[in-house]
Length: 340
Image (cartoon, rainbow, N blue to C red; front, side, top):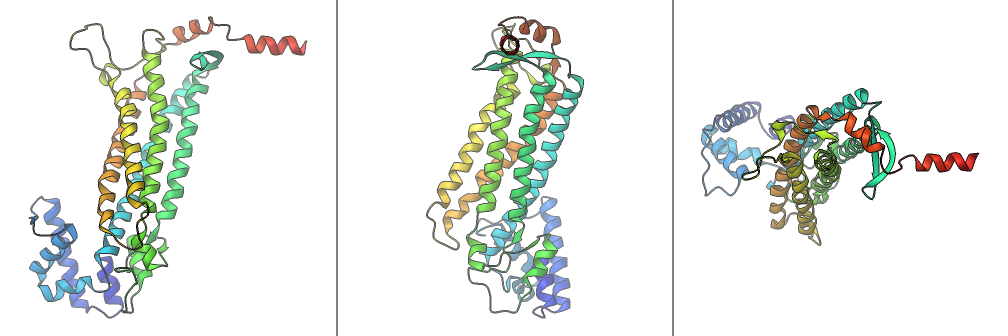
């Protein structure tokens, strides 16, 4: 619709043609949403399927004109970017909600004392507030990283066509504005070649999982009988098929395991793009599956991790008792003796 509106504003489409295209596309959208759209195996992809259905509804003469001054190369890049932008916004919201849960714990547990660890051995006493805020600050950096990537992705490739633009007098800035982009990509060849925006999002998700996997690992340790610092709700745990005493921290283990999955998706696309000649190559058809998977995995994991943290029980007494072992104040004592 944005492209058709731009074509009409440039005199390439007539007003009645634009109206017919918009009405037809809205019908196609409705059919897809209601599950009534029929996909034909002969259609090469979703774009061809929609274009064919549009032509069936409004006639091929008008329907075919929608593709004026546009190639599937820039169409695919634009659609993919719109998905990536939307995913950034969704992930930012989920990260902020998770941070808020951490801040609520930090507010409550300013005086809940626990041991900190280096080399997984007792180090110095800290508050649980201090501990959980370390993860909150990690996630705050993740937010900044996503915001930076979103800013870099906010340029429209629509109108780049196959790789060298078009001889039609178009207004790419208008279609970019309608679609919510900040600006256009100034070089058409870069417009259809670029997948940095996908790599950036995959990297950002990978770093998020680096942080959540560290938190989950410590939740697994701290909930074990050897520590008993926290109790994870039964809602996020399972029992054993043979050992009745078991309570397994499944959510934490699954998020920890999915970290390898999102790392793999990043490495996969990096490898696909390595040494790829400019403009569109069919290799780039492989850019979407891994990204779709990483986005869904990240959204699901952040939602359930937040829900789990909301219900976590902090065992204050066990934390305090652990501080009485292992000479946690040895550093402070040594500093005192040096000063005196």
